[in-house]
Length: 158
Image 1 (cartoon, one colour):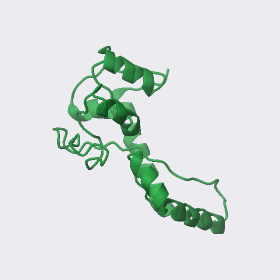
Image 2 (cartoon, rainbow, N blue to C red):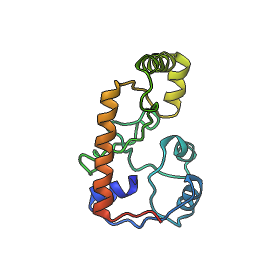
Image 3 (cartoon, rainbow, N blue to C red):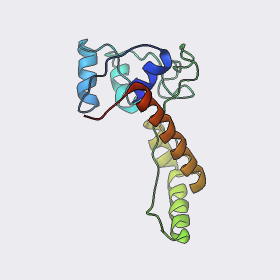
Protein backbone atom coordinates (compact mmCIF):
# COMPACT_ATOMS: atom_id res chain seq x y z
CA UNK A 1 0.00 0.00 0.00
CA UNK A 2 2.90 2.35 0.70
CA UNK A 3 4.20 1.75 -2.82
CA UNK A 4 0.78 2.43 -4.29
CA UNK A 5 0.46 5.61 -2.23
CA UNK A 6 3.91 6.71 -3.39
CA UNK A 7 3.23 6.03 -7.08
CA UNK A 8 -0.05 7.91 -6.81
CA UNK A 9 1.51 10.91 -5.05
CA UNK A 10 4.48 11.01 -7.42
CA UNK A 11 2.32 10.59 -10.51
CA UNK A 12 4.30 7.60 -11.75
CA UNK A 13 3.42 4.04 -12.62
CA UNK A 14 5.00 1.22 -10.64
CA UNK A 15 4.30 -2.44 -11.20
CA UNK A 16 3.24 -4.14 -7.98
CA UNK A 17 5.12 -7.38 -7.39
CA UNK A 18 3.53 -9.37 -4.56
CA UNK A 19 6.06 -10.92 -2.19
CA UNK A 20 5.49 -13.22 0.75
CA UNK A 21 7.41 -11.00 3.12
CA UNK A 22 10.12 -8.38 3.02
CA UNK A 23 13.05 -10.80 2.88
CA UNK A 24 12.34 -12.08 -0.64
CA UNK A 25 11.63 -8.53 -1.84
CA UNK A 26 14.95 -7.26 -0.49
CA UNK A 27 16.78 -10.22 -2.02
CA UNK A 28 15.32 -9.39 -5.43
CA UNK A 29 16.06 -5.68 -4.92
CA UNK A 30 19.73 -6.43 -4.20
CA UNK A 31 19.87 -8.78 -7.20
CA UNK A 32 18.38 -6.17 -9.54
CA UNK A 33 15.23 -8.17 -10.23
CA UNK A 34 13.16 -5.21 -9.03
CA UNK A 35 14.25 -1.59 -9.06
CA UNK A 36 12.57 -0.11 -6.01
CA UNK A 37 10.84 -1.17 -2.80
CA UNK A 38 9.20 0.63 0.06
CA UNK A 39 10.58 -1.11 3.11
CA UNK A 40 10.28 -1.24 6.85
CA UNK A 41 13.07 0.96 8.16
CA UNK A 42 14.07 -1.44 10.92
CA UNK A 43 14.38 -4.35 8.51
CA UNK A 44 16.23 -2.43 5.82
CA UNK A 45 18.80 -0.48 7.88
CA UNK A 46 21.29 -3.39 8.15
CA UNK A 47 21.29 -3.75 4.35
CA UNK A 48 21.79 -0.01 3.96
CA UNK A 49 24.62 0.15 6.46
CA UNK A 50 26.23 -2.86 4.78
CA UNK A 51 26.20 -0.99 1.47
CA UNK A 52 23.95 -3.55 -0.20
CA UNK A 53 21.15 -1.07 -0.84
CA UNK A 54 20.80 2.69 -1.08
CA UNK A 55 18.04 4.63 0.64
CA UNK A 56 16.42 7.25 -1.54
CA UNK A 57 14.13 8.77 1.08
CA UNK A 58 12.20 8.09 4.27
CA UNK A 59 8.43 8.25 4.06
CA UNK A 60 7.77 9.89 7.43
CA UNK A 61 7.05 13.52 8.14
CA UNK A 62 10.60 13.98 9.47
CA UNK A 63 14.00 12.44 8.86
CA UNK A 64 14.64 9.27 10.81
CA UNK A 65 17.20 9.09 13.59
CA UNK A 66 18.18 5.71 12.10
CA UNK A 67 19.00 7.38 8.76
CA UNK A 68 19.68 11.03 9.58
CA UNK A 69 21.33 11.79 6.21
CA UNK A 70 18.39 10.49 4.17
CA UNK A 71 15.80 13.14 3.24
CA UNK A 72 12.06 12.70 3.53
CA UNK A 73 10.11 11.77 0.42
CA UNK A 74 8.38 15.15 0.59
CA UNK A 75 11.73 16.95 0.66
CA UNK A 76 12.90 14.74 -2.19
CA UNK A 77 10.25 16.06 -4.57
CA UNK A 78 6.90 14.54 -3.60
CA UNK A 79 5.40 17.39 -1.57
CA UNK A 80 2.97 16.35 1.14
CA UNK A 81 3.77 12.65 0.89
CA UNK A 82 3.85 10.89 4.22
CA UNK A 83 3.49 7.22 5.05
CA UNK A 84 4.09 5.97 8.55
CA UNK A 85 3.15 2.67 10.06
CA UNK A 86 1.61 2.61 13.50
CA UNK A 87 0.10 0.23 15.98
CA UNK A 88 -2.85 0.64 18.31
CA UNK A 89 -3.86 -1.04 21.53
CA UNK A 90 -7.55 -1.97 21.33
CA UNK A 91 -10.07 -3.61 23.66
CA UNK A 92 -13.45 -5.18 22.91
CA UNK A 93 -16.47 -2.88 22.77
CA UNK A 94 -18.11 -2.73 26.16
CA UNK A 95 -14.88 -3.05 28.13
CA UNK A 96 -15.45 -1.16 31.39
CA UNK A 97 -13.88 2.31 31.35
CA UNK A 98 -11.94 1.53 34.53
CA UNK A 99 -10.22 -1.36 32.74
CA UNK A 100 -9.47 0.80 29.69
CA UNK A 101 -8.04 3.53 31.92
CA UNK A 102 -5.81 1.03 33.73
CA UNK A 103 -4.61 -0.47 30.46
CA UNK A 104 -3.70 2.98 29.12
CA UNK A 105 -1.96 3.95 32.36
CA UNK A 106 0.05 0.71 32.34
CA UNK A 107 0.92 1.17 28.65
CA UNK A 108 2.06 4.74 29.34
CA UNK A 109 4.21 3.56 32.26
CA UNK A 110 5.74 0.84 30.08
CA UNK A 111 6.65 3.07 27.13
CA UNK A 112 8.13 5.72 29.41
CA UNK A 113 10.73 3.29 30.76
CA UNK A 114 14.27 4.11 29.55
CA UNK A 115 14.84 0.57 28.28
CA UNK A 116 11.61 0.68 26.29
CA UNK A 117 12.48 4.13 24.91
CA UNK A 118 15.85 2.76 23.74
CA UNK A 119 14.22 -0.32 22.26
CA UNK A 120 11.69 1.75 20.32
CA UNK A 121 14.40 4.14 19.08
CA UNK A 122 16.51 1.19 17.94
CA UNK A 123 13.51 0.02 15.90
CA UNK A 124 13.00 3.45 14.35
CA UNK A 125 9.80 3.86 16.34
CA UNK A 126 8.38 6.32 18.83
CA UNK A 127 5.46 6.14 21.21
CA UNK A 128 2.29 8.15 21.48
CA UNK A 129 -0.46 7.33 23.94
CA UNK A 130 -3.55 9.20 22.83
CA UNK A 131 -7.10 9.37 24.19
CA UNK A 132 -9.56 6.83 22.79
CA UNK A 133 -11.57 9.48 20.94
CA UNK A 134 -8.44 10.75 19.17
CA UNK A 135 -7.47 7.19 18.20
CA UNK A 136 -10.95 6.58 16.84
CA UNK A 137 -10.66 9.74 14.70
CA UNK A 138 -7.21 8.68 13.45
CA UNK A 139 -8.52 5.23 12.47
CA UNK A 140 -11.42 6.87 10.60
CA UNK A 141 -9.03 9.24 8.74
CA UNK A 142 -6.67 6.41 7.82
CA UNK A 143 -9.55 4.19 6.68
CA UNK A 144 -10.95 6.94 4.46
CA UNK A 145 -7.52 7.67 2.98
CA UNK A 146 -6.86 4.03 2.12
CA UNK A 147 -10.40 3.45 0.86
CA UNK A 148 -9.98 6.37 -1.56
CA UNK A 149 -6.62 5.03 -2.79
CA UNK A 150 -8.02 1.50 -3.24
CA UNK A 151 -10.93 2.86 -5.27
CA UNK A 152 -8.78 5.25 -7.34
CA UNK A 153 -6.14 2.62 -8.18
CA UNK A 154 -8.71 -0.21 -8.47
CA UNK A 155 -6.76 -2.34 -6.00
CA UNK A 156 -8.16 -5.78 -5.29
CA UNK A 157 -7.09 -8.64 -3.06
CA UNK A 158 -6.48 -11.82 -4.98
